[in-house]
Length: 238
Image (cartoon, rainbow, N blue to C red; front, side, top):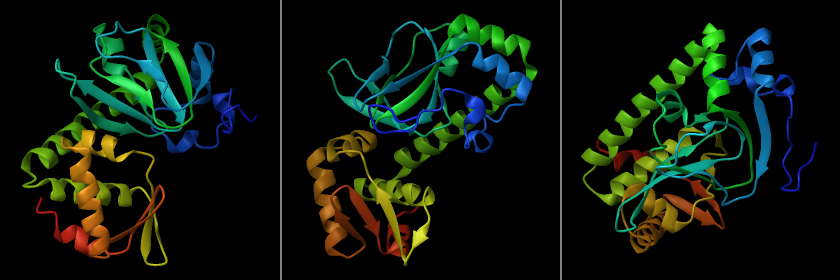
């Protein structure tokens, strides 16, 4: 049914048409019925904090729709965006399992539906359902491999321009090519993109302007059209 934030909310996971395409949620009927009994469904607006860095783990958050940014901050207040979480992922897994504080903060960047499961209930759920344990291990393994790729990409890239090109290419991989171009709906501000790449807002604005002048991309509002995918690939050395 429609929500105040104009998104469709599925209060029952059994009714979710995307469930079979999502690794964690693609559970058998019996296991899913167990999850249904312990989850709480909520809808959040843009800018809502699900949890903050160093907070004791209350449970896990299953992202059903929308996107969430994971951030970490230095003692001087400098912020770095570690990842943009897509629907189907589970947030707070490692902290909930280990019983240690959340290592990052999670903030919605657009309206989201989130299913929350208390830590004690989630651990009991894993203990009772081997299938859920396997799916959890798969997601943790995938996150580990992704972290390794990101460290390699950011650490070995020779310039901020190369890092930005790699980020745009990654976003292209998440969409399909239409009429010779990749249409990217970018909900991040220039400041947030800078926080992902460890640079300044001014640098990102300048680099995007340069790409636009070279006709590699076109920008219309929050939409970025990648018109020369090959040119972006030539900018990436790793």
